[in-house]
Length: 290
Ligand code: GDP
Image 1 (tube, rainbow, N blue to C red):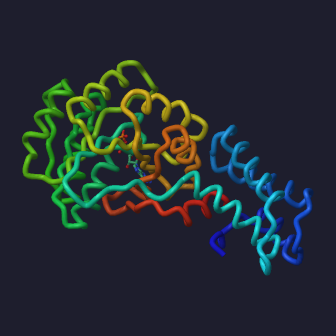
Image 2 (image 1 turned 90 degrees about the vertical axis):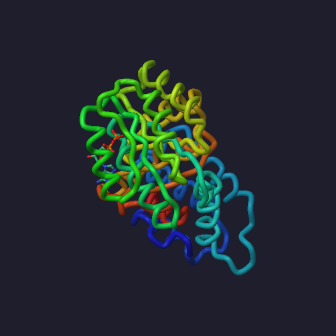
Image 3 (image 1 turned 45 degrees about the vertical axis):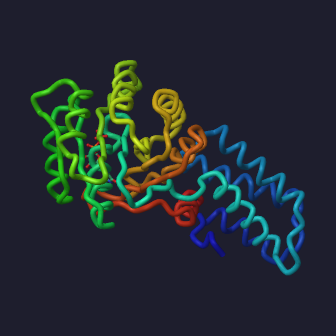
C-alpha cells in the first residue's frame, strides 16, 4: 500500500478495520479523528484539515469498496487520493532557460534554497546563475556568494548597493551567459508593506517564469497569511519547503499550496547545497500522516 509509513495511532485504528469488508459510521469517524490529529500535528491549517476530513468522511460513507478490497485499504486509498489531489505533482520546471524568483520571510531559507536550486540545475546540465538582491539582511551577500561558490555556479550581487531593483536589473545583464537565473530576494521578520512593495518591483523588473514561495517547515498556522500576501503581490507558482531534516513535518506547505492554487517544487533537507530534493507526493504524504 502507498502509505506504509503511517503514525502508530492511525495505523492502529486502520488495523482494527482489517477484517471488515464494510465500514460502519463509527469506524470512519475514528479514522477521520486520527487523520485530523495527524494533520494538525503536522501544522496543516485548521480549516483545511476540516475540509479534507469532511471529503474523506463523505467518500468513505458513500463509496462501496470495490470487490476484494478490505475496508481498511478502501479508506486508506480515499485518504491518499484526497491528499494527492490537494498537493498534486511537483511544480513543473522544464530543463531549459528560465528565470525563477524566490520570495519569503527572513530566515525561511531563500538564500540557501537559491544555491541548492542552482546546484540542482547545474547537475541537470544547465548553466545557472544566482542573483542576490537582498540588501536588507547583513551578511546575505557574503552568504550567497559563498554558497554560489560551493555550488560552482555564476553569481551576481553588489554589497555596496542598497537598491535591490537595480541589482536585479544589473544582475540579469551581467549573468547573460547563464541559462537559469535564480533571483534571491530580501525577506523581513514579518509581512511588512515595505517587503511587499519591494518584491512587487523586483518581480516587474525580472519578469520571472516561476515565482516560488520559500517556507520553513516549522511555519505552522502562519503559512496561510504569508501565502495569501505573496499570492496577491506577485502570484505564487510553487512552494519550496525548507528544514525538513528537522522534526517539523511541513504541513504549512499544504496550506500554502491550497491558498495559492499551486504545487510544491522542492524540499530542503539540510544546510549544504546538495541537500535538496524534488517534491514527491507519496513520501511527503506519508510523512505528514506519520
Ligand atoms: P533567508 O533569510 O530566507 O535567505 O534564509 P537562509 O537561507 O539564510 O536560511 C536561514 C537559516 O536556515 C540558515 O542558517 C540556513 O543554513 C538554514 N537552512 C536553510 N535551509 C535549511 C534546511 O533545509 N535545513 C536546515 N537544517 N537548515 C536550513
